Image (cartoon, rainbow, N blue to C red; front, side):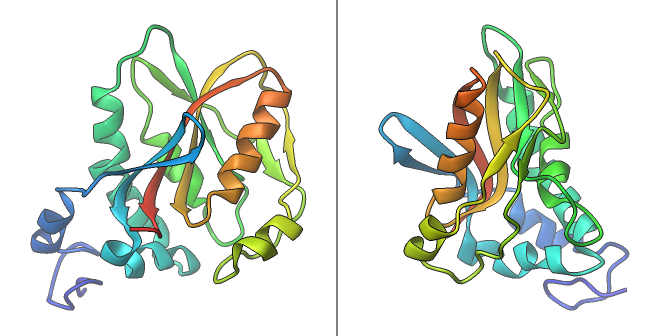
Length: 190
């Protein structure tokens, strides 16, 4: 097999050398609403080819590796006064796997408990390459089930305009949940 990044011979989908380059995330903080922040581990330009692997059969392997390097380490260092519920944004499967469910799974720790299938988009539309105006006119229309009165963290693979995260936050808050912040693998702004 060959490394998907450098194309050198490798026993893993991403070779050890390329994994070493991913071990030091650039970590970004972006305010998307007053006093509400998104935290990302990479800029999109750093891992764009890896992010787009979600459209291919091998994407789950890449997302698991990226989640171990970033989300899992975050969870190991996260402390809070109570247990927080991690919610993947729209974790239904469009392909062979749900990238947001994979990322959220790696947040499991003493202070974070993942919960799946509780924030689903009723409007399945592709936002890739679309501007903010298109996103605002074509909302996801999230349906929240089986979660209320919880302190939560939202999880997604990529933030571009922040519209999806804001809509997901509002949907959770309608069910009396508190959303502390959102956590994404990459940020398109940086």
